[in-house]
Image (cartoon, rainbow, N blue to C red):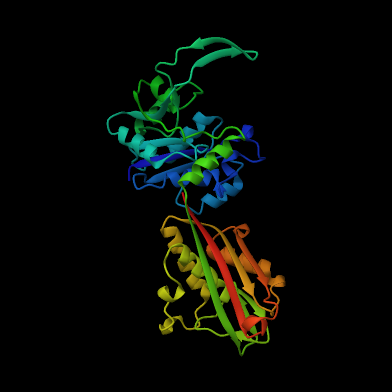
Length: 377
């Protein structure tokens, strides 16, 4: 694939507040950078470069485990773009898109429109025609007006023929407002494709609320419920949410009888309308006898991701009189997070009794209920 995207994420974003650079702040259940990167996950783009600030050590460590190409930020935006372009050297790139990480609401249609325009132009970028009256001002007073005809508000991604923009940056004498300015200074023509009012750049603190409203309009949100029961039998421990808990009896089942993990797995399958564990791992198949429930949960999580969803959060409730869950709840939360490759703060594991009513109240077994929330941007 000869098309690449460069996501410039090395800025500090101090005007947006929040105590951390804006690209790492939460937005509608994910970080700003996560939303932006997801938008460029389209078949037409073969490589994605993420330009990071040298001090964002956690991000370097995290994204080193992904297919992304990482590049260090420069002294200014132009330097960061040049470092991103250099990271693509030797990969046979013919087209490149350059995008600000702080524009997480860019549509995939806009991205494709820029790429299509590069078939007939050396440069292309989305722009919004200015429709409001324009004033000049000083000290809080209007000092004049400006003609708005032919004016556009620039957006990203800005796309270019790779060799042409590399040469343009190398020849440019200093800072520039954006890559279109660099390209035009080198004599490149840049086509304007229709911009999108929702493709805002997060700059100030109040921009987060607007971006969240936009993203939530586009999201596919799924909820799934899971319920499972296992009876007690001989044994000296139970396995609950992946943790071995000492007890004077064990749980009986075809697999390891992890009632909590089974409920969570069924919640994930339910959110996808994919039935339950029995559909994917039939109890009639002897290969699953005594199997670790981690196998089932990983399969459900992989299926979620293959369908383009992310797991927003999990809530699991264990219903039993004994054993006591409280001393083990944090370990269960962390183990489920490890298996599902999620932050532990997205998983809740808690317990309740049935006030000695029913089979759980009589100590005949354990029940579990779970809810899963899936989100697709």
